[in-house]
Image (cartoon, rainbow, N blue to C red; front, side, top):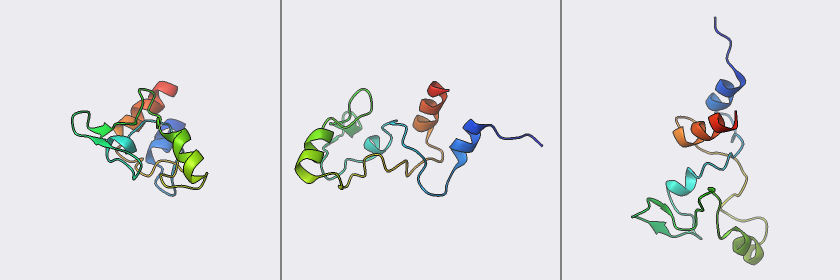
Length: 92
């Protein structure tokens, strides 16, 4: 029986929220209450090329550290997330 690699184990984790790898997947599915959806780009307008929220500092400054979106809370969609899988492969 083939032993799973660490990478494969990371891909199939489904209990809790696996670590966020800043793949931008969540912001490409829907905009949070601070975001603005772009139909043309099919993502939030505030998502940067590096898959970061360009409004992060503004949100934290105005609303404090405990806000929703849950920055750094982990990936809530790790299974079958090809964007995340690609990012993990690039880090390997």
